[in-house]
Structures are given as C-alpha cells and as structure tokens.
Amino acid sequence: MLTLLGVAVVVVGFLIRLNPLLVIVAAVFVTGWAAGLDPVAIIKAFGHAYNENRYVSGVWVVLPVIGLLERYGLQERARILIGRVHVATVGRLLLVYFIARQLLSAVGLTSVAGQAQTVRPLVAPMAEAAAEKRFGPLPEKTRWTIRAHAAAADNISLFFGEDIFIAVGSILLITASLRSSGVNVQPFDLSLWAIPTAILALLVHGVRLMLLDRRLARELKTQTPPAPEAAE
Image (cartoon, rainbow, N blue to C red; front, side, top):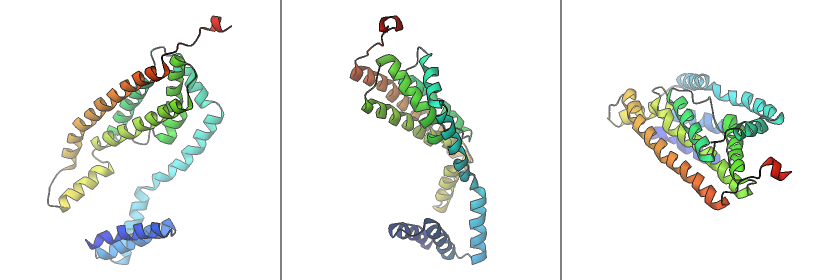
C-alpha cells in the first residue's frame, strides 16, 4: 500500500498548485522509494516511460495543421460535401463515424481520429450541415446539442473499441491489477471479452443516435428548405 503514496503526492501537489512537472517527478520518486527501488532504477524507469510515450508531443504538430486547414475552408468544404448526400442525417452520419472509429480503435489505430483532429473540424460541421439541409437554419441550442453528440460518438467508440486491441495500455493495466490480486488472466482473454461489450455499446449508442434524429425532427418540426427557384 505504500506505493500509493505517489497518488497522494499528485493530489496534494495539484491542490496547492505546484508546478505539474515537479509534482509528477516527486510522485515518481516517492512511488519508487516505496517500492524499494534505488534512485538510479527510478530514473531509468522514468526515462523508459517517457521514451515509450513521447508520441504525445505529436499533438502539438497536428493542431497547427488543423488550424491552417480550417482557415482555408476545411469546415465549409465538409458542409458542402455532406449537403450533396441526400440520405445523410445527423444520426446516420454519427453512426457511420462511430463504427469507423470503433473498428480503427480495435486494431490499435487510436490516434487516426479524435476530438481535435476529426470531430471539431469535420464531423461536427458535417452533422450540422446534415441538420440544416433537412430543417433549415438551426437554433444555437440545437447546434451545441449536435456538437455534443459528435464528441460523445468519438469518446464512446474509442472507449469500448480500444480494449479489443491486445497491446493497449488499459488491457495491460487491468491484467497487472488482477494479477496483483491473485487473479491470473491473460491479455488475450480480456481482449476477447471486450468484443461483446463493444458490440453492445454500438447497439445502444446506435439507438440513441436514431432517437436523436427523431428528437430533432420533433423539435424543429421538419421544415423543408425552399427550392432555389422558389427562393428567387
């Protein structure tokens, strides 16, 4: 239980608003000391963890690219594209994204899509465009509702899809936690049992998205946009 002192260091450090990097380093040394590691071993473990997870810094490379694309009309082109798909609705579009995101996560490609890379610049604007095509101009509250559902589709599909991939961090963490409690389980078994959970999540959220279409139609009373000739 002494190894949990590192968690206490993190909590206290954040409460008193110390430098986050110093708090994390202190927590690492406290945890290593409680586990009986010498300082050299602690630094070695810390360096190995940093080297294995340094891809996180790639986010700072992606964000300027997304900003540049948005400035030159990425969202507008996405709206035009979805406007040409006559069968597109908010629920159907988000369901397609949900399935694609879950399948990619299941094979370990969790960084292919995401909130910053995909939802904000593409998925949410396309969902809003699908609603505008059916109902006309949208109230601000409805826009935020659609954006929230777009973000939820990404979060839920990733959460229940990534556990199917055997080498994901959550599977390894669950395996280590169970073994420390005397339960011997293989990562492949956990990955296998994550499949029915992912399917159930798809079914439940798929129903929610279909109900979202009905809710929007009821709230906005299904107004058909006027034809270009009539508008002129």
